[in-house]
Image (cartoon, rainbow, N blue to C red; front, side, top):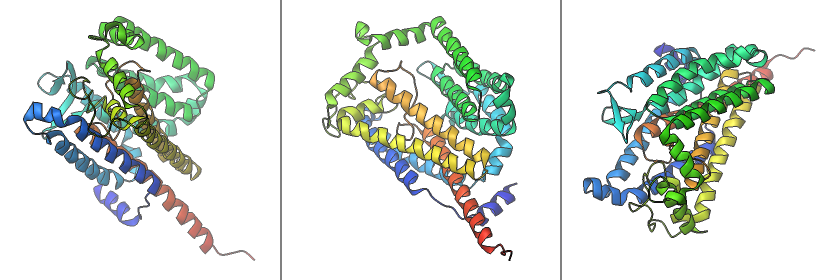
Length: 393
């Protein structure tokens, strides 16, 4: 199999989407600068070295680019063949991370595995696997998805296992993202609108029940509704984030001049990086980042549409799924930072601090580049074949 992959790579010229590349580099660069700005003081406190977190984030980005190089070399046909096995592997990872002594516990959550000194959040790997598996499922069962309610329920029964394991960590936010990916891809696959709306309502009711029966989730929701009612306790993080946005105004207080990151705003270099950016770069910086994610989402769906028109249906749904994942997770992270959504522990794609997250997301974006390259190569070959086809007089 490895020999076939290498042969396939050697025969295909790689075509890069330049706009998408610029968007990804822009997000990586802005994210790195903001991680450095928000973590210098933390590095001094934790390790005595102000450059501790910026240097580690640089290594994370390098590792992510290496993972991207590997992922971009894998043909889409191979992803399609291994999708079901990858999903089984993802479920095993979610089970393994819950084993005491193997899973790494941070802030009361068992979400990480330590691999060669690098903490990998298993849910990020499972999100990528979910895209690959669902793309294959929609291709294999397209008629069932479009005609039968069972065609919608069958994959969700499998995803319910993954979500149950995620809730044991606990990681409610990642469970919501994975279900959104699955349901969004089935909707794009042609699910009937009536059946889809019933399914959405059912999932919403179940999610509401999970919030209602869990004290800490309920506390987050009530704190989100009125964070100022308990600004020193349950609403503390959101209040500090809102203060960051207020101080930022239009042009910000200046890069490095933010105050909220100085031990006021928890997780400033990870989940609440967007708030630091809002304070230091203001509305202008916020709009730039939102514009970059909008362009990323547009290019993902554009590439998916091109692949679908070229008859590469699996690749098309992979592109759609990656667009849904990155777009929805970015929307949730920014919404949490701005106080329009309850607090969830989701990173800002390609920007927040974290090795495992950076590696997985760079690899995922490389797969999107691969889809684009294979589509262009296919179209070029078709055009060449038509030109060389002898005319009939």
